[in-house]
Length: 187
Image (cartoon, rainbow, N blue to C red; front, top):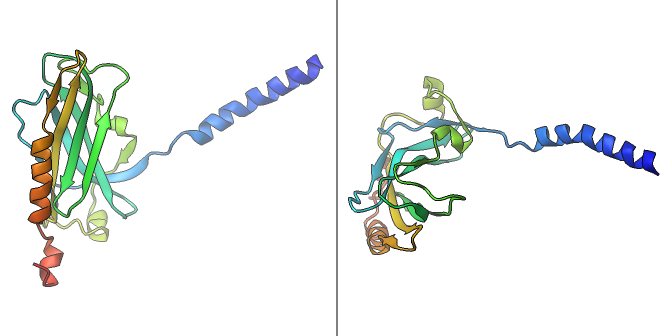
């Protein structure tokens, strides 16, 4: 019985490294979209205790969309327990994210520490990628980054939800058409 148990433990230990190497997520290949194709705008919130650092839009190398990467910096004097941010774009897209870090974000601290922490493989934007994915230097839209709320470690809060709701309504009522939409007579 003991030999069977030891043999099972031995075989399992041989398979663990294989299992771990197979379950490690692969880094998605992306390129950074230049500002003359998608303009990145950060909402001016002078009284907000946190700020976006290095916000960028990216496209998937295989096509089919993209996303945003950024860092958040605590520019206030209090530790932050959590926050909600919003990313809106001129075509009507909206992403709202709430983050509750495992440990408090201390004053002057930035998270993630670098854009590499997004687990993306950022490749240079070549002429081939530009041609294939229509990254041609013509502005196609805006992406706006905004902090919606912040919860401090002491229980107090910063709340910009009313400004956020106003902005959402404004963009819904005043869409900014893409250049392609204008060509098709969709002004």
